[in-house]
Image 1 (cartoon, rainbow, N blue to C red):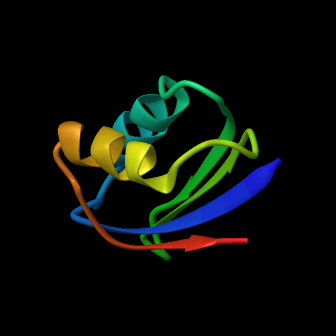
Image 2 (cartoon, rainbow, N blue to C red):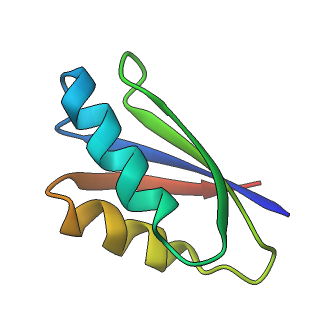
Length: 72
């Protein structure tokens, strides 16, 4: 498994959190997502072969901007 930490711009409410979480969970190979509104981050647990750019695309399609992606 691989963990990604996405810094996301534009989230301000519970609806935003749910929208981003849903978009990321619908991405193939994503296993778990935790969105933190205060920190403006999403922590994503995915399969090892997952590409971070797929996560960025999912967030941007949901109407938000990804400022950075950190893999760990």
